[in-house]
Length: 394
Image (cartoon, rainbow, N blue to C red; front, side):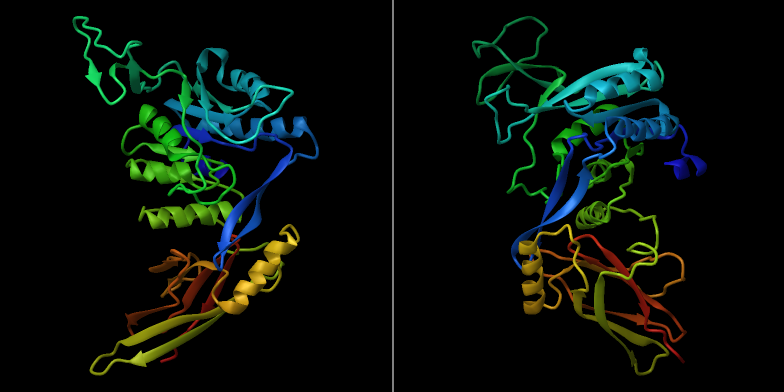
């Protein structure tokens, strides 16, 4: 976020939506598929061993920068639940001002689990604040049914009828009933705590217009970037987790959205060898009657050199067995930059796993000059590894 300020984005973001850790003192897994089997992989840790003070301190520091990034007519939406929302409300009042409080949206949903010691907790809280007293918000409308499902017959009141009965359109209330992302939902990515697109669509639609910049600095599975792109908004998505970043990249690629990825070049920690080892075949074939050549690349195999200790033994066994049966089982995506400049990976060929299958070869006609081929491989856990090779000599 500090980088965005340095790049001149201060006061440019029309919408900031953040869905940070909730201080649940729990860890969350993503459900991933390998070889047709489900495995669990850690998505993020929300345990906060140093306590509530450090959680609120980290949140506050980020909110202060977000205020600088927010446009004067923009809105910030902070998505939490009962664990810490009451503390966050006080912090938001301090940073943005009590008079800048706009709404508390209650998102209520159905989910499993209940307790005999309390009422079932089936809602989240979304705090909405403005930066100034002037902000853009166009309340959405919802159906309001006549209690007897008969026409009102009031002059000047437009009435409609559907399978339920007669209704009028009224401004939407601050309690939103939207289903969570189901196990069989088409939008499901498997990422823990994924938010439904309908929820984010309402937020984007009510306070932004085409071309506005929307940002999510805890983007997780990438719901806000995906929705913003489809709605014709510009977007910024950030996350510290490689699984979250690669889930977002895959999601945007699948819907053919235009985007660029900025971040560290290495797909693993500096000084630590990559966990993924891939084997490629790179060949050049001469083209008759031409000074051009056919560059052919084939991904032969990929294997995990080591598996995180956070993965349970059952999932590890599944990964190993799948890799033996299919040499590309652990590959979620790969891409090729046919003319790497030594700085930025700019792929012109991108391959994503689709319905359990992934393309393993590509080719391109290139000129005869020297070039470096740069290949990015992403495994099912979101780990990224880069390869340089295929330098053509003469």
